[in-house]
Length: 369
Image 1 (cartoon, rainbow, N blue to C red):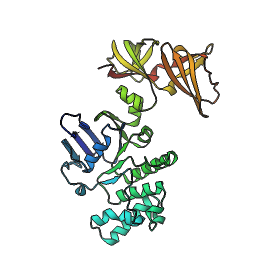
Image 2: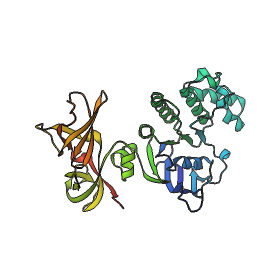
Image 3: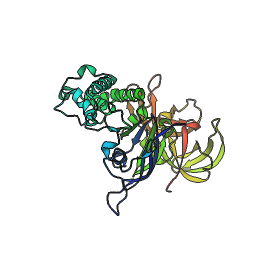
Image 4: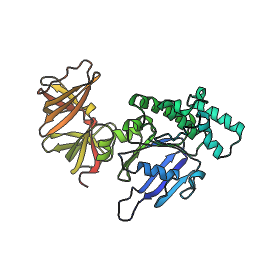
């Protein structure tokens, strides 16, 4: 059985009476050694949650448990956590080694042990050769790694990352998220990572908490939240999506994986089949089809699966792939495909939009309820 490192129980933050809580009775468990991402739009409560865990903000209600110990009212300097901020919060008048040493000095670690742990932390982030360099002379990516080394050197009970990549350019962000994940896996530091970037969360996290309006809408692995979203918000926020308000009809069978196959109809679009949980018959739900799982067939071409006829409205070519918007009835369906070996349809072409039944999902959440 996996040990629970962090347990948040009914955690709540309300800034003033009469207004909606910024975090509302949030419950979540983070297992030892995992990296969990708090993902959501601005104002959803993810940074407020992180600051309460860190001790930088008092909760209005609820409990924070680390290693089985209630730390809800424990002062920040006694929680033993390491935190990396958006701004990195490095001391510009100190060199690299002095910045990394700061937390050890506050804990009154002996000089000999300080040096050993500083060397180990800088080697971990592959910057040992820069130990005497002023932090002002470092690149953004190097500063980010020094901030990470400073957080790790104190051997924290939890590593807390508050959008640490947001100040980097796109290419460096990709490189650094790979490096952070490699360091986290190497150290097995239990980590809570705040981000509004879905690609970061999908790439780095063991599990993702999708937050909206102070609540967790879904908590699961990257595969679960992308492939099997439980609400329309999650389907829309994580990845690109075609979402349709549908009337779900009868169940017509089951897939080999055990999903139920349903008939559905969408006003102004047409009818088709999709998979979902059991017990969704004769209800109003959302049907999800990811654009990269939508096929395009020209009139006269053979295809399998479900299909609807429409007209190409727009095309977009990006080298490796192309994207289309296809007008079907009163709806527009997005499709994406690789360019290799495929003719790119043009605006005005009549085409069939196709999909395999297992690539259309009935989302369990009821529409308008």
